[in-house]
Amino acid sequence: MADVFATVAAGQLRGDEKDGIAQFKGVPYAAPPVGPNRFRPPRPLTPWDGVRDALEYGPSCPQSVQRPPGWSAEDAMSEDCLYLNVWTPGIGAGGGPVMVWIHGGGYSIGSGSWPLYDGASLARRGDAVVVTVNHRLGALGYLYLGELAGEEFATSGNNGNLDLVAVLEWVRDNIGAFGGDPSNVTIFGESGGGAKVSCLLAMPSARGLFHRAAIQSGPGLRVTLPDAATGSARNLLEVLGIDEKNLEELWSLPAERFVSATQEMGPAAGLGGGIGPVLDETVVPMHPGEALRDGTAADVPVLIGCNRDEGAGGLPAELDESGLRERLAAYGNEHVDDILSTYKGLFPEASPVDILSWAITDASMRSGSIRLAEAKLKGTTSPVFMYFFTYEMAGRAGHGYEIAFVFDNVREPIAHPSAARTRLAEQMSDAWLAFARDGEPGHSGLPKWAAYTVPDRATMVFGHEGGTVATDPSAEARELWRRVPAPARPMMMFARPPA
Image (cartoon, rainbow, N blue to C red; front, side, top):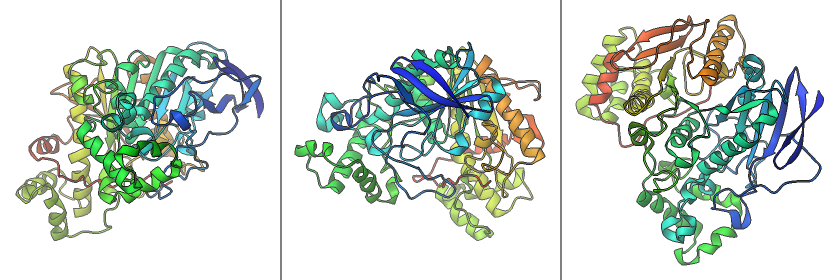
């Protein structure tokens, strides 16, 4: 490795270069959100003297160490977590597309430091500048105190997303030093990262800071209403043993206590205690689905899709017809026969576990992606593109399995390579890179990828045969989930891909 240097607004950075790609890790993009900055929007960074080393990842936001299956552990955690990482093929070169990756994990776990998100291969393949980020999570990033602590904390339910705006402002002001074009920025994210991308599309403060958006298995149609967010805040205060009249105690607690407290709020609230972005009239003034329908981000092309087996996490290895009916009853006993007849008609050879996995996926992630895409179509002057990932690893095309292919990281030790995997990774990473360059994901290695429109609903299917084009795939299932309401409690359980 060789030292490389870049100068940003706050000072000079030392990174290193490996195999022709310069990497800068642990670059601060805002002031540490600690002490009096806790629960407040990100503050400007204080410049430093001399050369700052950017050789190691910065710490992740404090979060649960209880990980879903396959999720990476965080090497270091701290409330001082506002750091980003950059991979670039050319310091000082000009005009490369910029791709800013927003990690998954809902709003409570994850970071931009996982090996799966290493941006070197993608940067090398597409002559692009790749950025990954850490930001505030859980109560530290999304605890809504606007109705309990006053106007000063009106944004507290969305500070984690405001951190992402600070990242994009940093990119606008500094990415040219790394060979990136600040007028050609793509945001992309998976799962909770896709939902954060959805929010950014609806946020006035993010407008103009990015120019394309890709949402992978994370359509965020709605955010939390203020009353519900205040209810979650009160629940957290109760667990913490803090009276509403003594909110100043929130600033003296160690950051880790917020993590343990959200876990104590009960499994029904999820890992993050049900705490996430809020419809606060300012930062997120409209639900993302409604905002897109009304023309917000009308000039931003969107790439959206999901995987065939999003709902496979936590399912049994085998299931009989009686067990399948029992589980499908979560959608209402009156709908079970309709669901079964639809999927057995589409897939006569499917096992009960297959039907359950696909039904859960279609009812939530896939129908959500379609609804968000069609909301965008109603208020857009730019195209929408749809994909569907069906490539199986360990028998499933599960939640997060597409990430290694998008990043062209189908290699040891991240994933076991094969000829089919390598070919698909080339097709998918080239598609995401083409989208970042020009706003259209089509390229010479794929069949013609038409924009998504109604009623054609053109969809690129990424499977074992590579990319193929389908028109309104599984239309009967799409129509089914327009008729059948979502259950009160979602049935999806997420797992990360095997190598």
